[in-house]
Length: 118
Image (cartoon, rainbow, N blue to C red; front, side, top):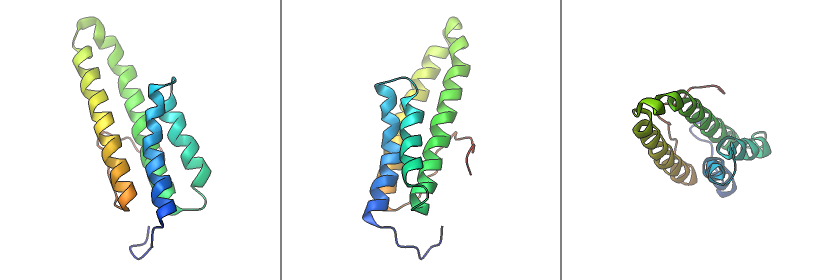
């Protein structure tokens, strides 16, 4: 994205929605991936800011999903339970931080994110 690009309030709101839509996972299975995917697909063509934030949110949520799947077998030896809790807390905090940054027109780099979409 160009440095002199002016981000409109509408773009900021949609970018923020791409991140916050991940909380749909609290209400239905895979909502943390489907929510951001819907927001991103709805506006990716009309705004490079929404496109960038949507990809970032999707990459992070898919990464978190994969990490959770990999940690589940570790729950049988008890070590996985604290790991899941830490991963979930990290996910919530990073999602909130990313949505706040997006609403201000600032970039946010998710930690632990695998770049599936570039």
